[in-house]
Structure formats: C-alpha cells, structure tokens
Length: 233
Image 1 (cartoon, one colour):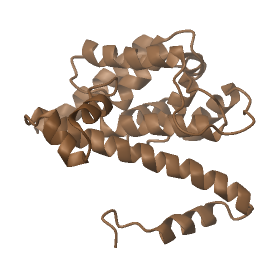
Image 2 (cartoon, helix red, strand yellow):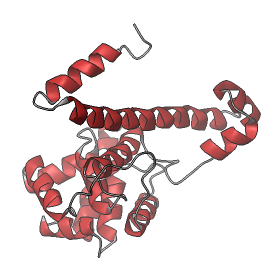
Image 3 (spheres, rainbow, N blue to C red):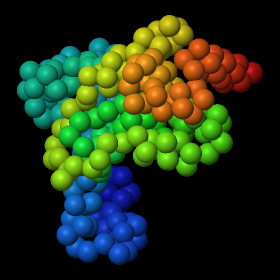
Image 4 (cartoon, one colour):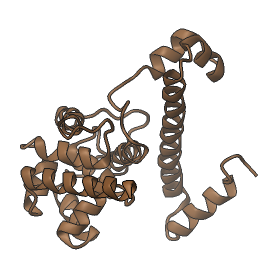
C-alpha cells in the first residue's frame, strides 16, 4: 500500500469507469491531463509544508536539504507567491481552473475557468454561496459553459498562463480578504475577487445569475461571522 493509499490500478480503474466509450487514444489524453493535475497537487502539498517550516524558523538551506535540492533552488521554487495565504480548498480550486482550461484546450486561464474551479470544490464557501443563490450547481455550470470560448485544437502541456483579468481577480481576492480583516484567502474571497473585475467573463456570468458586488460581500461576511460564532460556542 502506498503512503496515499492509492495505486496505479485504482487510477486505471477509475478512468476506465468514467470513460467507458473512449478509445485508447482518448484515454491517453485524459490520463495525461490527470497526471498533470496530480503533479500540480503534489507541488502544492510541498508548498504547504514549506510554508509551515518557514513559519517555525527553518532556513532555506534546511528546506533545500529536506527536498533534496540546493538552497537557491528551494528558495526560487517555494518562495512566497500570489497563493501564499490561500487555503487548501482555494489552492485546489486554482488547480481545477488550470485543469478546466486544459480540458477545454484553451491556451490561458480565464476568469471563467477560475469560476469553474470554485464550482469544482463543493467543500468551499464559494460553492455554497453560488448554489444557495441560484438553486443548483447545474445552473451555474450551464452559464459558465455558455460563456466559454470555443475549444482549441489540442490541449497544452505543462504550465498554462493566467490571462491579465485572471491575475487581477487573484489580486482582488487578496484585497477582499484584507478588507474583511481575514488573514486567509478562501474560495469565498476568490468569488469576491472575480465579481470585482467588472468587465471579466466571470463577473458578467455572476451578474447574469443575480449577484451584485455589495450583496455578495455582505453574504460572505455574514456567513463567515456565523461560522466563527459557532466555533466560539
């Protein structure tokens, strides 16, 4: 049994079950997409523990030794970046956004992909806010799919860049968290960041679904206050 309690046979079985009609070439493409997602999650797992090690006073030399690379390589790869204060659920939503762009054969990650990423993480507060307002996950998903650009000719390999409006939404998510006095950036803050970039596809989708920036902000604030109050009981 592996440390993650998952085996190659498990991965093969799941892919085969989910794509029963696909031929072997189609399964190769899907396997590559899933391998990239697993790789991205693995990088985030390492980043998580690097951040914890830094907070406890570990040096970059010690971290490099733990990873098996030089101090310089560890610092360059794991120095604090735009997702430093992102929660694990929100980091996962970013991975899902990248996967959505790759699956649709798009050459960049747009705000519509970020919105799909939030919809793919049902444990996140953003998902719960989206579904509570619209009545169903499918309604949100249909609105996003309708706004997606046409699929490209083939899926990209490796890193997929963020579009300028997506970078702005990520920055606005951090600002939304700061405005609310939160020291973390959760899926709810990414949702707020998306609607703040007014001309972006995601903001247009959210407005079509009935969201407004002020109402969304107050909904998020109230729900977080409620959850924190529950923890204090």
